[in-house]
Length: 440
Image 1 (cartoon, one colour):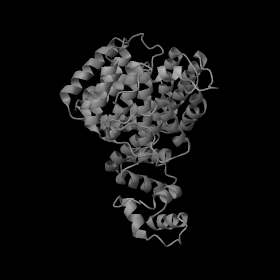
Image 2: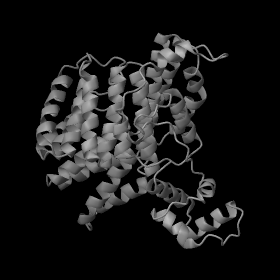
Image 3: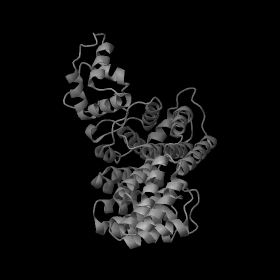
């Protein structure tokens, strides 16, 4: 059951979606309870919305009229130490079904992010191979390959067009196609492959939810997907996928301002990846910790791990392959390190890295290129190079047209805000108007 404040957040979010105020909420709850419409007074509903009071007696009717899902979703939390963890497969399927049915999700929290580090159920797959229910579908290498192929197809589309495109397809595939396979009959080796592939699919669903919007429900949904991706990967005994899922949680924690938690998650991510024979993966995780440390204003830690990531990416030639971290190219490293350097105040080095990402290494995804252009424009403005910033931001707006990504939209909003100080300058006014037309 959510806390009083969590419940208030759920109620507020659901009312905002419907355009309801406290009067409308009180009326609808009264009717749902079989009472006259004016039974509940407006101030009661206002207290629920503010978190001053929980709707104890009225809670079932509040949940009914607002379509709230108040059932526990199976995640372990720091508040339930000693309780037995819910089976990961049952939990992730339930998570996907809540998403399909558009249930409201609690906001992402720092406590939930850290609770993901709890020890996963490492014997889950072994138990499943010994207790398959009668009539379960047989699963082999073909089904594992199918999940991997679908992840690639959906991931390619999302990387090009943003997480807001076709996220529902990833979730439907999880609940309709992959769920019967997870509950099927398979060998332990096949089970590990299936859990690993599903971890990638669940991670992708989390990334798409995070990129879809900044609303609390989007971020809470993403956080739960990332945590389940980690549990699936850990149960598959796949350290790279485990580290990558923890990286997702760390990056989200950084974005949400959970600075200490982001550093702790990034450190765990590095620990999982330290034994990998994959320089790109090592660079990926070290840069994550450098970024979290920079956001936490820990210059020493950030500089040390930025250097380690640079060493690793320098050894990555010819190591792309099919690895989950294979997409972390020198160009993407140059972008991420450039932004760490900007946070540390080295704007000249930051600009050089961002230009390397664009001009030398190139970026193969339109969404990625748009974000780098937006970041480069911001760095150039901070350097006092207004002409360079305007030219770069013009390229950003052209590149970003049609992309459904909250990160791209946020970059556009940030650009327009910074251009407000140049009101009356023709080039700045034209760019602001052009951006507004694209992102309205």
